[in-house]
Image 1 (cartoon, rainbow, N blue to C red):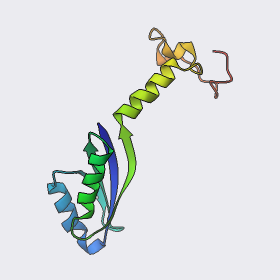
Image 2: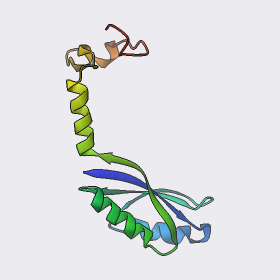
Image 3: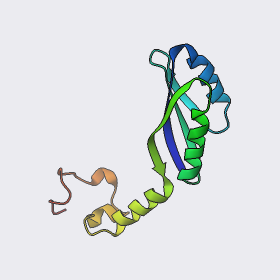
Image 4: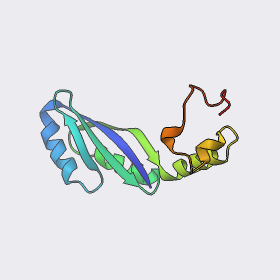
Length: 117
């Protein structure tokens, strides 16, 4: 599952109309808007990047939308891949993979690669 935040830009006089259209849409979730600068924040979800891009194109097609740009993205698959690298990588101190040690008990010295923990 992928989740991405989208910043939608509209002219101030159309923001209420576009906000209502996005709230009613089944292809995104509305979160916030700032009428003074004409920006709206929404998120889209998809099984992959192509599904997310299709939803961004739907947002761009809403009347009065000037731009709709992906700002932040989360990919569950990429997250799991990175977690595996951290768990298996040689640069991770053993104590960080030890479930018997509480996070509150780990003392951080500024650079884990250069410290003997």
